[in-house]
Length: 147
Image 1 (cartoon, rainbow, N blue to C red):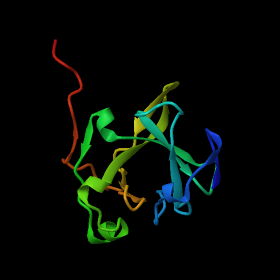
Image 2 (image 1 turned 90 degrees about the vertical axis):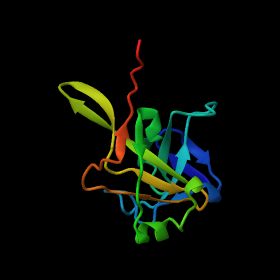
Image 3 (image 1 turned 90 degrees about the horizontal axis):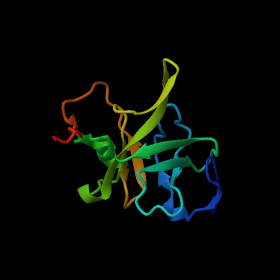
Image 4 (image 1 turned 30 degrees about the vertical axis):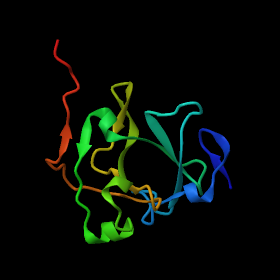
């Protein structure tokens, strides 16, 4: 199927590559079907574009949190586990959405720490886990090496 995208124009996507977020994403609950895209020629990209299949103007940059030094240990409640179709741990990935923050005339790209995406890669279904407070099980590794 052909999909119009914000960054990549028209792309061909196999229907079995679509990721469904049954509850949508925070603020975009009506958008439930997404695809992952990245630059051509990059075998292991640092970030991906999570593109809405239904709205070509809706796309988010997402990254593996470990690339930014974050490690999530998330507990899923029964409803979340059911929504993800009771995945095996090796079938689950956690991703962070990025946003642009303008402060003092400068722009920065920042991760959304309290709302990671949890995706069952086998079933191609995901959810956004909204956390009310930062929990101690989210850690920032020390990325500075000693000299």
